[in-house]
Image (cartoon, rainbow, N blue to C red; front, side, top):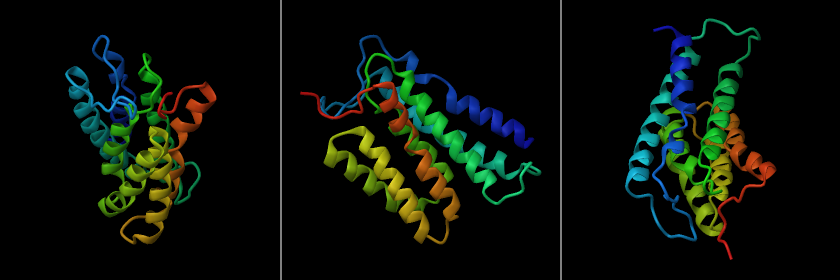
Length: 191
């Protein structure tokens, strides 16, 4: 299969508006709700995890197989991967229209990172993302913690190229920044 076809299929998987088909009157699980998705939303959560992981795997294969870039740099494939992840996370955050939480792309982020970063980076960086989210009681803190975890752990783990984790760490913050600009609530406890 050609590298371009890998990239196209990955883009379709990552940008498909899965969460716009959620159940009627369904709510996302939030910190102030203390609930997990159920019913149709639980099924969408599992599908979201699998499609993000498979799409990430396809994207990495497609970018690695590209014959040459217009600008010959070791950063090009990693920059395109980070840009794709940032755009996909932002799209996932805004597909859910009935609430203004950023919980929807959390599962997508876990699935995508499981395919595009080394498992050691994922296992060592995840406690920072989870701890930040629990400490601040906000989904946005999960993205910021994941960003710092990717950048910090990626610099010390020799099995992973530090360029990838540095750029992915920056891209993980895109849904948080864009949602702030759009005036969306970032998942803190409501009073």
